[in-house]
Image (cartoon, rainbow, N blue to C red; front, side, top):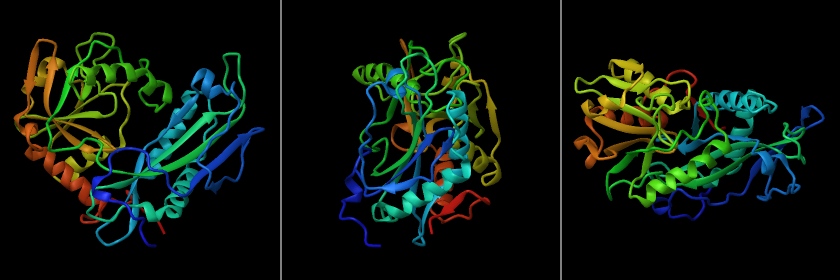
Length: 341
C-alpha cells in the first residue's frame, strides 16, 4: 500500500488522525463483535461513568516497518495481559486477550499507509483503551463499557540532541496509589499532570518518584521506568509493587542476560546509591531508552557524563540490541514479534 504523504522525519509525539479505529461495546454482560469505523468521535451521556469517576484504562504500543519491509508490532500479548489486569483492578470487564491481539492487528492493517517507512525514526503509535460508558451517579462501576483502539504516527518521545534529559527528585507523591502500579489507568496519569507540569516549569524533563512509605527508594518517573548501570556493567532496575511492569523494561532485562551476557539485578534501589551508578536511562514503549544526563535531588546534583551527549556504552548496547530485534536485524525470541499480515 502506498504510504501517506507525511514528512516522517519531522513529526513529533502528537496526535495525527488515521483512517480507521476499532470499537467494541460491552452491554448486558457481553462484548459485541466489534468493528472498524472511520468516525473518530466518541458520543457519550454527560453522566457517563468515565466522566464522573474516571473508570478508564489504556495501553500503549507501536507498529513499525522492519528492515525487510514487514509491518510488525512488539509483544502485543503482554499488552493484552496488562490491560486485562488493569480492568480487573478497576472492576471493569476483561476484553478477551486473544480478541485484543486480533483487534490490534486489524487496526494496524487498516492503517498501514500511516506506518512510517523503515529508517525514518517514526512509528505508528497504537493506543487501546476502555472506559465506563453508561450514566452512573452513585459511586459504583458502570454497567456498559466501550473498548477502542486508535492509531497515530509519531516521532521520538524525547527529542535527542538539543540537551540531555534532566530529572528532579520530586516531593509530590506517586500518581498511582500504593500497590496499584500494575495498572495503566487514566486517573493515575491525570493525577500526575500537576507534578510533571511543575517539573517542566522548573526546567526539568521528568520527575523521579520515591516510595511513599520511606521516601528513600527509587520507583519510576511519571511515564517511564528507570534502568541503571553500575561501574562494573551490572544492569539494575528498581523492584517495587507500586511501579508499572513495563514491557520494555522486561524485554531489556531479557536482552541484557540472554543476548549480552550481562549481570542483572532487579532490586530495591536507594536514592543514596544513585550517585554511584555509571549510567542512567528511562525505558518505555515510546522512547525504548532515553539516556539521563542529570538528576537533581533538591540542593544536590548527580551527573551522568555518559548521558550528557549520547547513551553510555551499556545502555547503547541494550538499545541497539532491542531495537535490532524489533526491526528484524536480530533474531527475536519466539513470540516477541507479531507480523501484520
